[in-house]
Image 1 (tube, one colour):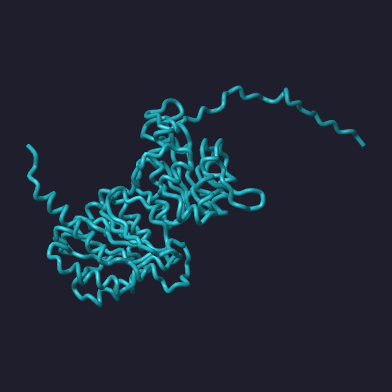
Image 2 (cartoon, helix red, strand yellow):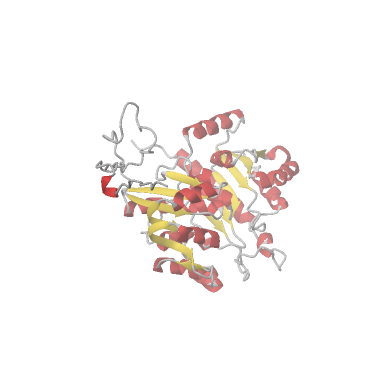
Length: 400
């Protein structure tokens, strides 16, 4: 039987490719599959270089109102990292709150496809706002040079990731510190926890041109013509159902305010408030106008934008009003009024002499005294104070 010989080839005999690897542009516009501008070749020459700078990821998955509070960090981030690219991952119901925000490059919805992409990217800084296990676990899985805020240890326990985050971390563990001692707003707490300089930056909630036009047309078509528009944000999150007034309390306020000829009253809310708003409207007849409650978060923002004054509990609707820079009359019961900053555009109505408030309890053992004690007269006087200031401002002759 003949012996067969197989000729082998050493690695040195293989053809070599002496080409240098492609130089991928450091440019925010470059996607890797098509030119940024027609008739250009991004690999040869970038037509409009936009370097990434410091790559930052914000992880913020909790309450929608908290997402709006977190937007106050953006100016502080840009002060510290002028040339930077900010990405943000949040829950599907909150992502629309970040529409039309010029400081955010990418918004990712909390879903497996986003996790896969973000875990494959490199960031210089990851800021996790949320003290939750799932947000902390995701933060620990990211590839980042620096991680700030809150993470998770080997036992699955939420932990602070940097010294600046420790004070806010302690607030969640010490009721006396949170309820009686702390006087910092949530915006200040978050800014400082991320190692940023706090300058009391406002929320960033921006309407698009289309939304501004929608507000203008809706106002005209609905016959909203009064000098001052007062909106009632009637609901709150289902997570804390005791952060809303009773139907009867709303009726009392509407009946009284309807006597002011220069006011027009609107009911505001989301899908969970539809039946409740209908009940309030039935009780007061034509003294209040109901706005749609089932058209999505961006339309809900538009309806709040119609108003000059918003009356609300500590809820997502209150945060929208703050973001829109409306005059806010906010009442408090279970939550901490000192943690909310109205930015000198409103008043806080706080129960006096109630030792059990705030408490952050979902169920009340005391028959909701903090709700029963809401000072409706103070709310009415706050509306009148706004009316008088607005009238005085209109009456003041322009300086020449």
